[in-house]
Each structure stands twice: as C-alpha cells, then as structure tokens.
Length: 104
Image 1: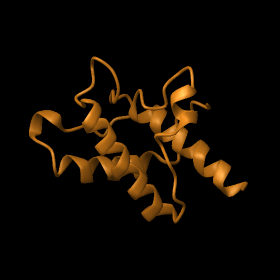
Image 2: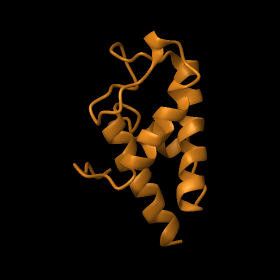
Image 3: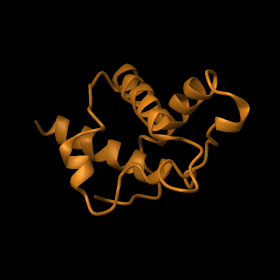
Image 4: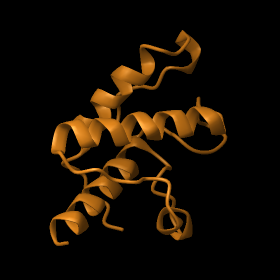
C-alpha cells in the first residue's frame, strides 16, 4: 500500500468526518487531521464506531467520485499495516482502490 503524503482522497475523508461528527457526541468526534488515529488504543472509535465511520466514508467516496468502493474487505484485513490506522492511511488506501477500479 502506498503511503502518500498528499492522498487525493483526503478531502473526501475530511468531508466524511464532517458528516460522521454531526451525529456523534463531542467526545467521540474525529479531528480532520491526517494523523488522526482511527484504530487502536488511541482511537476515539470503538469497533461499531469504526464500522459506522467506514460506511460514511464509502458513501462519500461514491458521491464524490461516482465509483463505489468497499473498505472492509478481506484484502484490507490481510494487509500487514492496517489501512484503517489513521486518516492518512485510510485516504491512501482509498486512492489505491480508486486506481484499481479505474484500471478495471
């Protein structure tokens, strides 16, 4: 998985964070920062929160790009470094999925 410092999907993930945060209590809201932790002990999300957030991101990617993607897949869970670790790794993974979809 490529780690890009300027993931093209970052604005889409930030928009999904805005949508997600609108439905969350203040202590569970995510920061719109590439280094925001999504998975693990430092995350504000529990497992259901992560699933809910990923669904919001999938919907936002489809809206913004017209390309449906599936984030929670066997491929994602089999990667040595989780694409769900931070906002940045998630955006880079989305870029990769969109590239694969474009190349059919």
